[in-house]
Length: 238
View: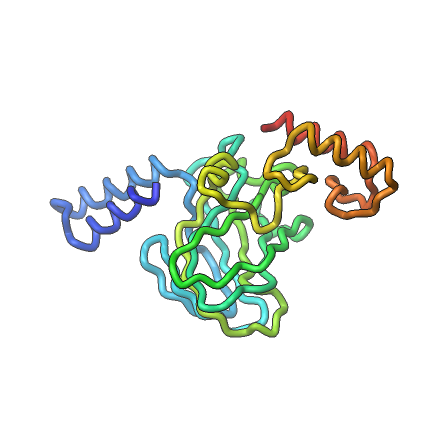
């Protein structure tokens, strides 16, 4: 998809198309072929320059964000990973993802780990399975996400380039050697998959009266049979 995006971009930049109608047709075909890209619809506490799918951003406050919305088509069942490429001279701390479905919702928050500094384009991955399960995220084309680059942070000025916000499958992420910044729901043993081994891990923690939050799959602050059921439900949806 990325090669196709930049082939069209280069064609637009160099005037390779015969006329404006041909250029628009190529762009429309790109959107048809690759329907998981998001477009910027709003922002706060930052300035940015946009070139096609690439944003050059300078944050200017404690909670700067981008609203990225308008799927070309609803997500497919296995498209549960938000991916984007970025460059940043510094680590980005305190990032969060919220969901617009299409109303802005705060009941489900994806708190991201450190997005490490990168001088060349790197890909970040976010697991959005929880938003899909609890909010029916991605079922309509007017859904989107709000990315707080850093949230209520003293890191008020950050320069970052970001491009190609898109949804991919877990298999595509794993083939690229990626792992989600916020973990995979149900992957209690940390092997990158949700399978019967995770059920066994929960049962072992129950036997040990564990309070380790990573085994609390359904988020009710308890580790019990409901977490086993939650993992089984995730497995059934894969």
